[in-house]
Length: 395
Image (cartoon, rainbow, N blue to C red):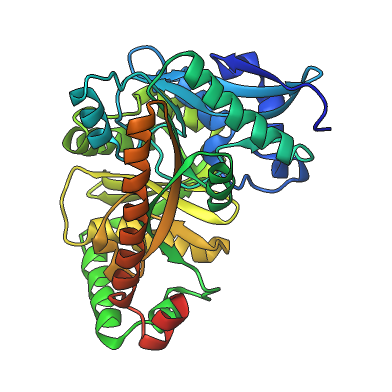
């Protein structure tokens, strides 16, 4: 198989490939009736970004899907974009850009293999079963060759799996280690079973937080699949706009994204909404993977004590327990998650830089950064809310 000629193609729209071919690489587990391991690399999610204008002209995320073919058959693909900025990535390279440009270089455009606006770990090299070695090598080498031939400053693969990070490093890419806070479901029967693993003080604090949050004067409801209705997206859009304006200046997703999501992604989503006096006042949107609940967006039009923690973290734990999922990924940053049972967890990315001198400097920086992240994870884990025996087990 490795002797067969592999053709690399750049494709500007998923619709030139089609859902069947793309998903044969992105989520082959769905053909057996299973849920997609990673909903964010499915055709339906990436196409929703395209069709809603959340990527494409004017967004700084120009689709350049990287594909590998053998005898006219798609064997591997990667969601790649030409980037004119570093927003919506969550693996921060702004300092790299500034340093490169101060030295007289042009950092943008760059190439980014990623899921736009989505700091969630998942496969970035999507390979049809049976072509694992050939497909990974073809995509990696093809991406570097494209970056070189087009004289872009750099290539980045963000929130890839640990296995991809290791294999990419073997092929000459630089590994970057960062961290997020994830909650691990130790086959808990219910939320109280999780609380039993915490120290007494932390257990009492969480119970007080949940009681105060749930006493906000209304009700909390979870919707998924056909339970989701357009009126709920109208409310959530207001929440999302408020959060986006405060965090990023302008929201990354368009209103049309949620309309497309209602049609094609509703079975992948769990929307938690708080209602008071007949009005939706806050909400948190989660995506459901085969093993993981991915917390993505939160917003509100009324502020109530601890309602953010309840909707984003505790309700997510309840959903994961009820669905038998292994973990909750609660998104980027946030050491406040530690006291609520979310522990520091490594995340990975891969990088290639064209300029040899700049590449050496980045490589040295990443080596030191990996050591610092290891130390930070170790220290933060000891400050977690778990009983001592549980902390030692997590370490």
